[in-house]
Amino acid sequence: MATGTLQIITMGDPLLRKRSEAVTGFDDELKDFVKGMFEALEANRGVGLAAVQVGSLRRIFVTRAVRDKARVFINPEILETSIEQEPFEEGCLSVPGVNADVVRPSSVRIQAWNEKGRPFSFTAQGMLARVIQHEMDHLDGILFVDHLDARMRDRLLASYSSRS
Image 1 (cartoon, rainbow, N blue to C red):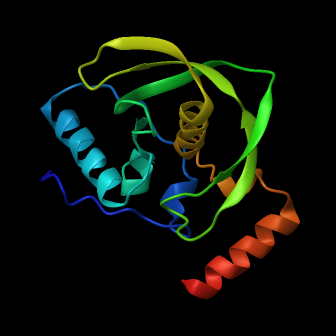
Image 2 (cartoon, rainbow, N blue to C red):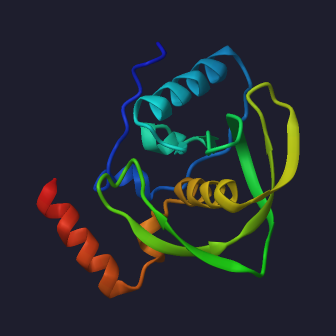
């Protein structure tokens, strides 16, 4: 796959509602795919991107949160979340133009593999913790608007539909 050609799919595409599948091979194709994900993330000025958002049902996401390095998460699992929760305005490259406050745990402990097949784990807080949770949702077919109360979600989605 040539890099730079990944297109972000948007809400309404049924792929966004499917559960992604585990990655089993760590090869050059995977490294090229991850590179393409970062290119798509940067081109769209995002802070996180899941593979499903570019049409691939693989359990992969990448992040480049403010004041953090670029990170790759393959077959990630959240091991623990904090009791403390906080609201923060979220948006999504797959739901362009829609933003809303979402309440999430303020920190998470995660384990995953990088694109070279090396395992890692760490605790993320603040913005990175939020981005991780948002992208993890994508791997399970969940969009950030699913966390909103029904009235707010319906109002936002009605305005989204009128723009699409």
